[in-house]
Image 1: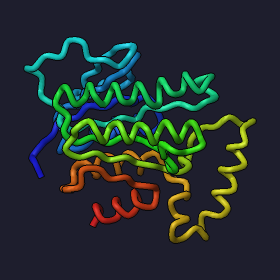
Image 2 (image 1 turned 90 degrees about the vertical axis):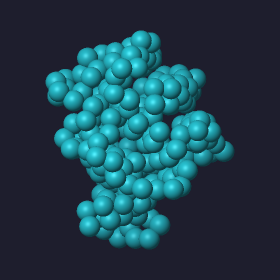
Image 3 (image 1 turned 180 degrees about the vertical axis):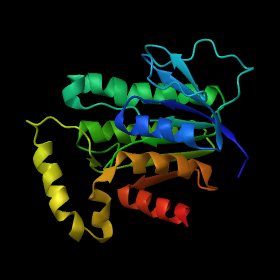
Length: 227
């Protein structure tokens, strides 16, 4: 393992992204963190340099800056928030791919992206189809190593109290103790564990060009890393 790394993150104001930003700031292996953001972040950590742009672009990169070789993308929305399938696609597909390409241009070699359980370019769900297409496109960008984390329900996520998601979250809480085998992928997972899995997965040696971790895989990875 190298002595130190520089990293760049997009989506650090969200649930997983905020946990990941704090983790990057606290990790001794990380020297510099570039945070792509649309508005100022609360973080004032000396490691973090905020790059603000409405479209999360980097328009004036200075090659004298430390090169980020690790990239993290925690962007995403919901159909309800986006307002339409087209608007959701502009964020969950187009923006994510644009940001990934930008990260590659500034030097990122290993990248981790938040996807979703069930992601597939052939899915009947527009949301999951967008996630699947993102995975396809990013795998073709030429990164040395790509990690997709595909969490199921995120434990502790704030949800609309009028939403059916309330019932789903309660159901998962009730049946979690009996979810074994392949069902473990559907067990709610805290955002902090997703963030840790993203960081650890790009730090550890792996010759695979692309890997995907569901919630069960992430827990297993973290258990191995702890040992």
